[in-house]
Image (cartoon, rainbow, N blue to C red; front, side, top):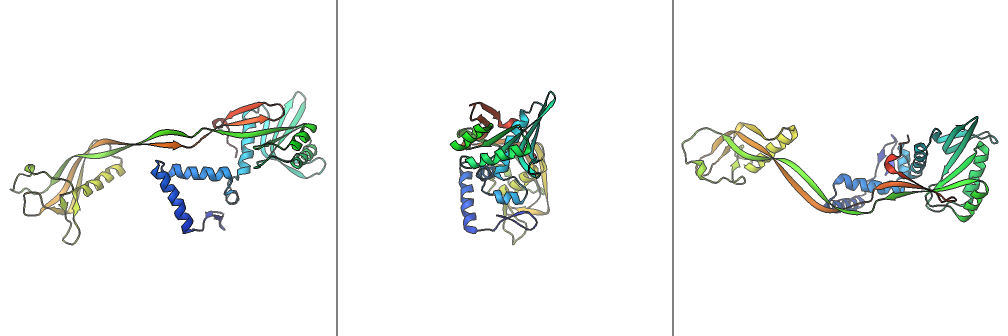
Length: 325
């Protein structure tokens, strides 16, 4: 996958890889997952592992590390209690005189005084080392923040923790809590039009009573001309049923399908072909249920925001987190 000149997502098709990918999708389909559920699962894994971060960033989507920062910002916005929380802020350093990027800033007033706290997010796959804490200490001093907070999903090295304690920097971990794999019965219910009664519009003729003969849908054939293969009745009914569904017609209903030129068919007990001007079908509503047992993958339930030094744990339901633009 790559970003083209128009900043749109494109891909180079490798048939071997594409074939293997389709095999996985077919396997999921065989286990009861529909195409959307399978693709959502693939997309979730790609996002969580940051597999396409560079590509996503090229088309304006958030890479994994930026999503982590937005979650931290959302947690503090949820519990701001009058403070101003800003994501991806910029503050000019007092000593350096240059803009300093701040992942999350928190400003609030108390009596006559203004306070500033800044948060640094480190979405690393391992514990944050001491040099990152020392660099953050320099940033805190430069922007004049009263408090500095660092957040990491994997925690901090021992030296980093001691350095943070010495400079009054609070350290937090942020983890996602997901549900377990669960097994459930997935039922798909389809409401389809069922042909309860079928009539034919054809010329009257004096012949054997058709009611004496059993007519099966697959045996009654209709011809449009001498060269075209015949069409069985069940195929015609299928096409009429599709039309009823596409038009959203309420059931039960009676539908007349005209044919011009007429179709030709040979009824049982006759030796000649009869023209059929129309088929009149009365449809009733029939429900078909298909059930199968599937494993439902884990879903994000909540975030756990933990203070390393004070051992305070805060749980935030994922559904409560505000969106961050």
